Image (cartoon, rainbow, N blue to C red; front, side):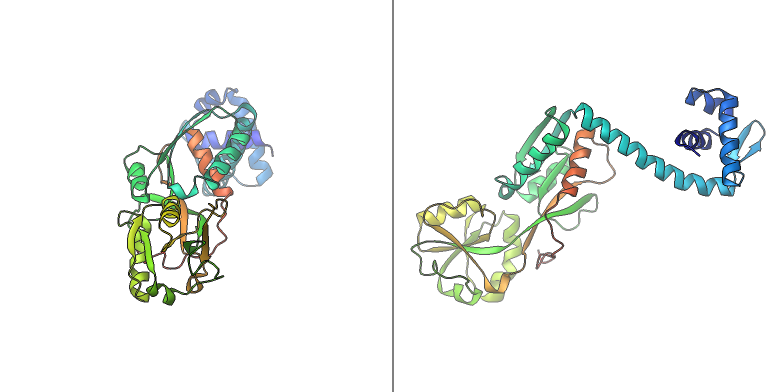
Amino acid sequence: MNLSQLYYFRKLAEIEHYGKASKELFITQPSLSNAIGNLERELGVQLFERVGRNVRLTSYGAEFNKHICRALSEVDKAVNLMKLYSSGLIGEIHIGTVISIQRTFLPQLLNGFRESFGDGIVFDIHQGTTYECVRGLRDGKLDIAFCGRLPNEPDLVFTPMLTQNLVIGVHTSHPLAERETVSMRELVNYDVVSYRSESYVHQRLDGLFAKWGVAAKEGFNDEISAMSLVMAEKSVVALMLNTFDDVFGDGFVNIPIEELSEPYHAIYLVHKGNVARNSAAEQLIEYATGTAEWDGSTPVLEDDM
């Protein structure tokens, strides 16, 4: 048995006519007939039966075809992928992203993708909130997005990529700055600011603030703005996601929260399911999924939005 025989079998099963199938395969009809006959003898079962001038699969042939089509599809995918590696991928990918992953995670991901598939790819990056990213996917303006997960989006596929913890950010002159951890109970005694209402994270924090009796004011939309606010107003405590381990401004420190040691929030790779995309976007989806940093931890309150 060889690969050519399996491709011949798949084509004949699709066309159900030796003459027409041989033309599409660019071989003679006797060559096709011999290949199928040899395959049947090797397997010890009849794969096709005559129906007038046509043929159709037997019950054995139908079962064989189901597995062979799946196997050959993987072979084709592997061959095409190797061709992409050797020749370089071209195309434009429209990407939506929240701001928090644009310093390290996203640049590293896209640089690695370019190293694997060449420089013929154009990244069209749109920064926005989770809501804006999801809207862009629904409207067809984006191919993929990296953002939070929204409920009731059955047409979208959400693949977890990495998790983020909730921390407080304070100025180094703040009374809490020397602490290794802080309890949510303590925050009722401080001037706490957090995300504005239009932020996706704000919706998730409402229940947390109510549980611990924290009266947080709205003060920023993203973590860079939170850092700037803390540097300008040294008495405030910013309750925020820890998304910038690589960036520390002079005078700023972030502190873990005792009750929230587990990952609080996840960033997902999001795309529409069962829609046609260019090959560059499809390859990025596969590449990103294979390099996800998510360790299987379930973010707390993930369904409490």
